[in-house]
Image (cartoon, rainbow, N blue to C red; front, side):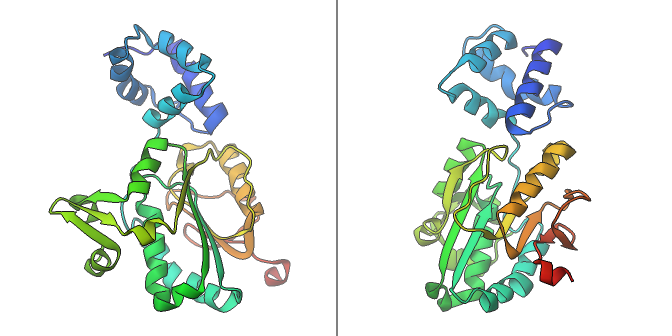
Length: 274
């Protein structure tokens, strides 16, 4: 296997931290494993040669491929189910009562291969039932990795990936392709806008979000980076709206969000805080 020199390791760590907030300081083995074969197959003789080429590429295609290789995208349907219970019992009843204009704005900020945004959507559809037609839903799902976004857009999942999906969901929300895979129905896939987005970039929202779900990605960020991101989330969260994080993550003590329960935070109005 091609070896990663200390200098190249430090260059790559600095690049990923500066541009994407991802801390790879303890991931030299992961870097070698994920990049070594690809670099050799493409005819590069060393990490140095490849990194020089990638960092000089003005089109950005090489750095996108680099990021795709180095980011982790482990996810599954109904992961950390407490969030979806909270959606059904607390969040959606609140939205139904509060949002008299029947609008709902959601951002899933770490889409990965799509299981999380689709789980949120199916939970929402289950709750509203036929009444869903009266709602204007703006639902965006983003990720840094273009390959997993393409996977999510297709919405095709092998049967083993669906082991946690309730049978009634398979019937209502999926189409069986064959014995080995199912596809999320076209109507559902059309309800989500999948887009590439770097969480280090400026966040611009046409309307504030009722819900931002950013689960199990900030665990790779340093505390300063994470705290700054959380505060930028706060700025685009609607008063009364929520932030979901992963259960292994915390938002830090200085956040303006109010802690509700593990991995769930809320933007309260000044009136509500009193």
